[in-house]
Image 1 (cartoon, rainbow, N blue to C red):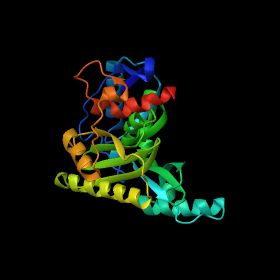
Image 2 (cartoon, rainbow, N blue to C red):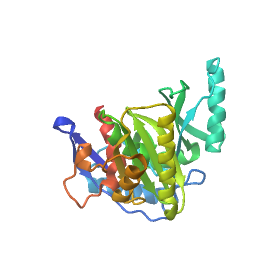
Image 3 (cartoon, helix red, strand yellow):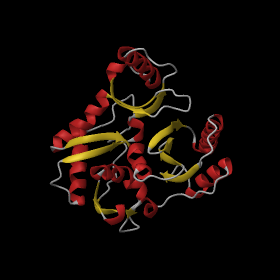
Image 4 (cartoon, rainbow, N blue to C red):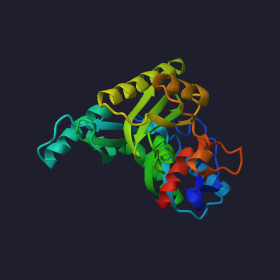
Length: 289
């Protein structure tokens, strides 16, 4: 739980923050199954958390969901639909196929992205099962809270890479449990988005494959501009040094992993982990954009 204030020079100061450990039985993040074991216990834990953070009077929130609770994809349209109704039909078909659920079962957010190098339309689509989303909203309702924005964890973390313009592309590596999400951003827009569930020993190979795909895509599009220039690693799936080493070896770059200070975030204490607050703090930056 985080509250930021906007400082000078686009610096973010951490005004209030608190974390709490939850039992594995209380929240079991899943896209397909119920998530919350006991809503009243979770509400009580959040009430303790808000007291610890000194935000007891706060009623409006943004919420970063556990990564496994939601799914996100970039959908590309191979042909241009002839009408708005045809567009909806195509997107509905792609969404149901991509997320493995009927359209009616999902709470969906979508954003049109810039066209790709071949001029094809693209959409960023985020989906949560409606029943799962209602679980979280019910807990907030018990506390008298309202969530104006609910996003996957990696989308909160991504805000740190999209706050300011920069030359070249940026890569977010976000690890959670048995999966990691990799997102390449270009001019504040996602270019490639992949969530990979794999064994720990397979993570480096999966990252290598994604980087090869990114490199081949640049070659096919005859892109001559800067390659990846920034890397943000969140979670314990990759060590910072190893992640940057794989990127540099694969792409022939010399980038380094970004620190909170590089992102414009002032942490008052080393005891507070950036990994723990990156997602909610990233969402908090949206309040002054």
